Image (cartoon, rainbow, N blue to C red; front, top):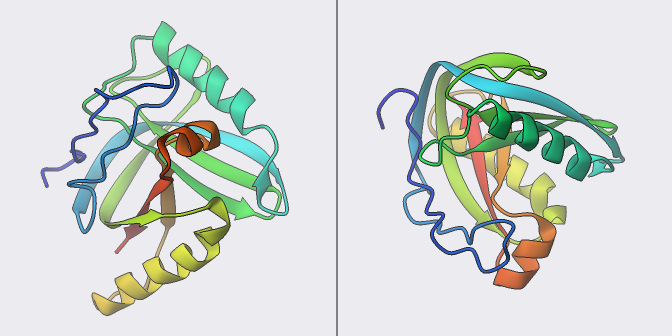
Length: 168
């Protein structure tokens, strides 16, 4: 995959009016190469790894991204990870700076794996991502997850796809 490119995110099916139905085709076993790729960084609070303010934080960031004209449907991903039992970090891919939000960049080489199942499986998926990186001869660095739909939409679509993204 080209530097700073992502697999195609098909947004054409959206029967919920919220999240588009995720098509996992093209997302599994991809190699991503980021060089100073811009992201909005947002933090959420959790209680024993269960987010408590994610909806409010994501809505705020989305509103600011829309106001800044910083949404590129061909470059859509939100990388999430727990930084502790009580906090999460989220990176929203953007084509340009978003006022009122913290900006950061991401550089590195990453590998992806598509999972399907409930949020509670994340601990096992994290372990699988670590093993995937080790099988490639590297020690895992950062591991992120792209939760492709919110819980309500996952229920409506009957599938909860999550993409693991591990730095190699």
